[in-house]
Image (tube, rainbow, N blue to C red; front, side, top):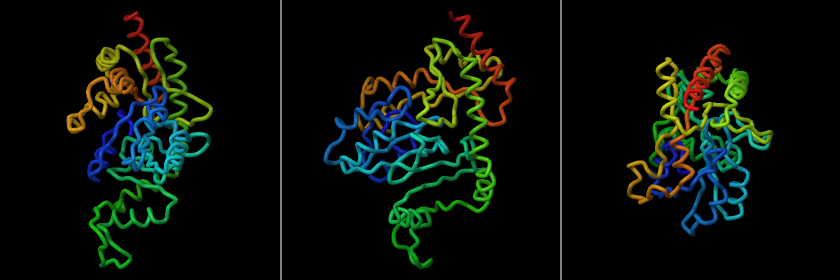
Length: 290
């Protein structure tokens, strides 16, 4: 699994009494670098967790091909990329299962917390339905195994059903906002989100990279512009994974990205004038630092 990204997937692996094996990331997609898979796999390897970050897709086709050739399953962490496509195929549909989050800040957000798993494997689907409902079997009074109280409540379901009808329009608004940012932030020292005809980016976050990340963030904060850093610490350097004994420098791309990424405001209701103000502030900072 990638050494950069949200921690939830890695913690889930640990709760299964399995060992997460981190790998460095591909610098353009921020996803797992498929070129590193061969050297990391052993006879104990059972699955590959492929994460799609910021609304983009990792190089999932190559990861999936490697998994099939080596008898492994792929689980896609697509929490931030609902609606994104790779090679005209939606993320979350390449692997054995695709996992999505309905956190309020994401492209399809509930009023509270929630999530979804998609799969075309009937056995997996049946098992997940049981596990999410305390391990309940076909008989509602029979519990086949220890499960979880993870059924989506009716209110969240109602909110999501209504917002689902607007998802494509909402994603289109995010894409339009991102294109405006792209035009306004055409600055050599700033790395903007990657755009490719083979990918559909839905911009859960509009994430740029630059050397003076912390200074720019402080400058924008002084102008009342909120930004976020996703994620300032790579997973292998988080204290909870100290027992894995990864050293600083183990995954240089992930560590470099963690020091450079900054997410600017982007959401469907963001006005053109507001984007122009954010971009103008960024350009002002870069001009001062030149």
